[in-house]
Length: 111
Length: 122
Image: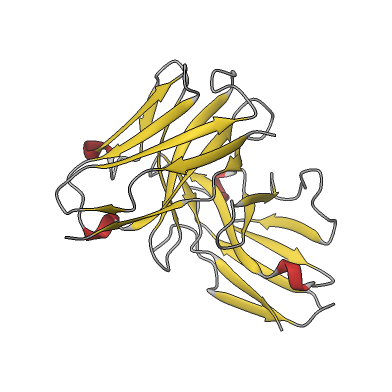
């Protein structure tokens, strides 16, 4: 059971918009610790996608955006492309556990 | 662009020690502000932070694993290593090494290896 809760899967057709949720608690996201998102294509190295809730590293398309509200965070992907098919993980820090924590991951399928 | 690559046995027997090495290229492991980290992913599950080491040797481990983990660094080889003792089948996972960047405003895992699968089985 991951500390941060993500839906196991989400799907969308090319060109559509999808939103991935990440539910935390008052000891991690809700405590104000930064939330980051990573994209992982199996067999490849995970890649930082969004940092500080809604900032993109250079090279990440602006189709990807993040937001945070209360104890939750979200990742939105617009204009879905086949290359977006991957696993997406949210990450924060938990002050009760004193560890960096991740979500269970959401598998995005582009139909 | 720094790159990380994990290496080590893919099969470990129960009760033995899991040993993995992460080789860093494209940057120095002694660069300030970076913590060299191990993270694992159990089959079909999320990611679990194991621990990190700073190039000076300072370590911090996940309390749930602390009694069985040692992370060390070899600055001459630009490598850092993980040892997990007394393994069981529950330690079967995909093990990643990553760089934790605390040099900027945001602290985050900015570079990762591809991961190496370790199976614990007799």
